[in-house]
Structure formats: structure tokens, C-alpha cells
Amino acid sequence: MRHLMSPLDFSVEELDRLLDLANDIEANPSRYAHSCEGKKLATLFYEPSTRTRLSFEAAMLNLGGSVLGFSSADSSSAAKGESVSDTIRIISCYADICAMRHPKEGAPLVASMKSSIPVINAGDGGHQHPTQTLTDLLTIRSLKGRLGNFTIGLCGDLKFGRTVHSLIQALIRYPNVRFILISPEELRLPDNIRDGVLRKNHQDFCEEVRLEDAMPELDLLYMTRVQRERFFNEEDYIRMKDFYILDREKMKLAKEDMLVLHPLPRVNEISTEVDDDPRAVYFRQAQYGVYVRMALILTLLEVEVC
Image (cartoon, rainbow, N blue to C red; front, side):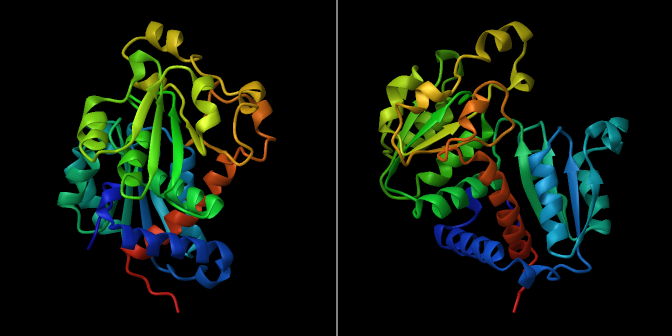
């Protein structure tokens, strides 16, 4: 039995197979429509979510399985003080696989140690978001035709952005990836990622404050929102939330084939006028999230589709 806590839990070769499976699911959905009949997915979401929770549920339903779970800690026995360890022991009696989101870093890992079913980390605090990373990799590979040999700009909240942390750790395993880290001083990438991942692996990167300065160099722009829920006070959030706004004028500085990704939800950081630009692929990215989660469920449940 395997769990997914980090994108590094899969080798590059295993990731390639997973992404190949996701592409085949996209091309041949009917082939997989009954592959998880009789199987149940539990979604244990201690934090609010739209895309991640619903895409997991859509993924399992598309595979012919069923879904149970909760969408906030208040609607679970966590409100009564039940531990994650006890919750997963109970859920293991009811479901075949589990997706967990939790505000505390490491909570899904604790659950995996006590679980008798596969556990998927669906986001733990500001730490990791591996299934978003799988979604990002599938989007990049499907639309760019490759993983590697590009310059990617990561813009916004790089301090608390778990999607950014996971994506960096995944992309350093591919050749000739250059990172441009675009953020205000207060939201710079934390030292454990800058030094412990990028510098430790001799990765090519630079840091910028102005998005306009980086735009002409980018093959990919990965926008992130400033996360209100990670700030200790409202004043700091209000001061930082509109630091970056991608609009039509900034898009004029970009390459004709640059792609704009965003894990969503967005607040103000991408103007709606950008949505009609063919380089804006964040809504397609959300659709790829369903395919890759379908592939992940099949892989962890070891379901063979003939």
C-alpha cells in the first residue's frame, strides 16, 4: 500500500506513467467509467476547498466509485476533539482510499502512519500540495509538450504558497529549468526551499520584485494569490493583497507562447480581462486536475484497466 504525501513520493519514471495514464483518461473517458465500481473515496477536508475537494469527488465518480466525507472540521468529530489518528482509523473501516486537507503541516503524514487505506495529502498548511503539483505537471507537459528546458516565473505569495513549494521540488528533477522568483520582500520563498532545495541542488534561479521586469524572459508564469488565511493580522494582508495584478498591459510584455497558470482561487492577482487571452490556461488547468486525480486513484488502488 502506498500513500502520496509529496510529489517526490513518485520517481520521475512513475510520474511519467501517471501522466501518460491521465492523458489516456482524457482521450478515452468511457474506458475508465466503471473501473472503480464498488470503491469508496473519503474526502476529509479540515479546511475550505472548492477545486481540490470537488475534483477528487468528480474523479472518483467518473471512475464509477462513490464518495463520502466532510468539508470542514466543524462538521466532523474534530470539533469534539477527536485526533487525526483516531479519525483515519475509523475512516479506514468505511472507505478504500482517502484524500485529506488539513491546516497543520504533517497532519496527512500522521494519518498515513495509522491508516489501513491509501492516504493522499490534499494540502497541509503551507507545506505541500502534491496533487496540485501533479495537475501543474500534466498541464505543462500537455500544453508545452515537455517538462524541462524552460524558464518559469513563480509570482505572489512564495512564503506561504504550498503549491509553489511542491512545484519547485518536482521541477528540479527535470533538465534546464530556470526559476524566477517574483515576490515582495515580505513574501519571499522561505530559506528551507531557497537554500535547502534550490541552492542545494545547484538550481538556476533569481529573485525579482517587479513582475514587469521578468515577463519577457518567461515561458511559463505561475501566479498565486496572497492567502488571507495564512496571515496573522488583517493589516498585513490588506497591505500585500494587491501587490501584483496581471493585466492586459503586462501580458503585452510576454512571449507569444508563454502560458499563465494559477492553482486558483484567484482574488485580484489576475484581471478578468486576461481570461480571453489564449495564453491564460488556468481554467484548463483545473480540468487537468480531474484527469490526474483519476489516474492517481487508479494507481494507488492498483486498479488495472484492460
